[in-house]
Amino acid sequence: MTAPTKTLNVCGKICPYPDMDTMTTLKKMQKGEVLEVLLDYPLSVERIPRNLKKQGHKLISVEQLDGPNHRMLIEAHGLK
Amino acid sequence: MSVALSGLLVGILFGFALQRGRFCMNSAIRDTILLKDTTLLKSVIMAILVAMVGFSLLASAGLIKISPSGFFWGAHLVGGILFGIGMVLAGGCASGITYRIGEGVVSALSAAIGLTIAAVLTMIGFLAPIKDYLQKNTQIWITFPVDGAEPVKVNPTLANIFGMNHALVAIGLAVIIAIIWIVIAIKNREEPEKKTKVSLFTAIFSKGWVWWVTGIAIGLINVLAFYMSTLAKRSYPLGITSGWAGIAKGLIGYEQVTDGVATAYKLGWGDYLIIGIILGTFIAALIAREFKIRWPGWGTIGQTFAGGLLMGFGAITSGGCNVGHILSGLPQLGIGSIVGSISIVLGAWVMAYLLFVRPQTA
Image (cartoon, rainbow over the protein chains, first blue to last red):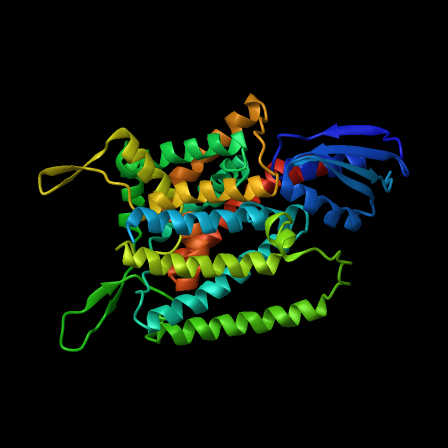
């Protein structure tokens, strides 16, 4: 299991904050660092993986924890 | 079927489809500039095309009567832009905040309360004169010379301003848009995503729907809504804002005065629709295990409430929210709804730019 470098908790937040926060956090990370995102907003669970590719980040895993709660691991592309 | 049952049933179907399709027009409009994601926008266009054809067929069969909203450009412009700004602040369009209440999203509830308060104040409260001023001073009718009779004033549509048959223009336009769309889609074809096979039950009840399924479902529900609401003597497809205002009027015991006689407000089809949407979403979210009380913190609650206030004033002034104008008005080709829709999109884009795009680039 990849150990996350950073954790972002966006539970309770809805459109477009889970997506925006994830993307801006990833932008600031180094290449190869892993971001753990905790979220409970169904639309973002489906939309974030779709949009990661365009930014060059890599989705490692999406795990359903309990009901709508999800845990997502993303490897940063490292734009800096 | 009673008005209550009919409104509730259509609402439950609508809420179910909204939740499964994650159908949010705020996201659809905003994401095209913010995340460069057009998936939800495609659902919206699909829903409009289905309704455009469906409404025409029902109208040709004499089952419904095309009833475009009035055209008052000043009110559409001011109301639409304010609605668009409000919707970005509120984190959801009128239908978006309504269905998310059924998912347990507390910020959606505060936005809906804001929308309801402002809608009632703009309909019958101290904000009403502003709305009346804008609507009365910028209204444009077209007059129809009916054989041998006095010319009648009607609300303009893309069909009647050219004196053309409604179904012909609507279906023709739908076909043209569909062809352009297919050409664009072929040009920008992406590799299809690998799909994992799931049972039909899982696909319907626990996974999010694919965009075109959502679009067709919502389009068809809107056609059903137009028919059912016509039977209930309301004669308009889906709408959200006036339903919320109606529920509030019922709660405060508002009395309507006609010819000096006051009668207590009775909940109508559109009001029951709202209750149905929340119920339908709740059912869908429970089955998909997506229901959860989500508390975002007081800051967000304040922001979505303020957004709701702008939406309520905007929708009543403009004569429609994103559902009334975009989903229900555009398919009827109403000129007022076209101007109203463009204004909503403009307001949303300006606010999305200020709130999200600019801070990122700074």
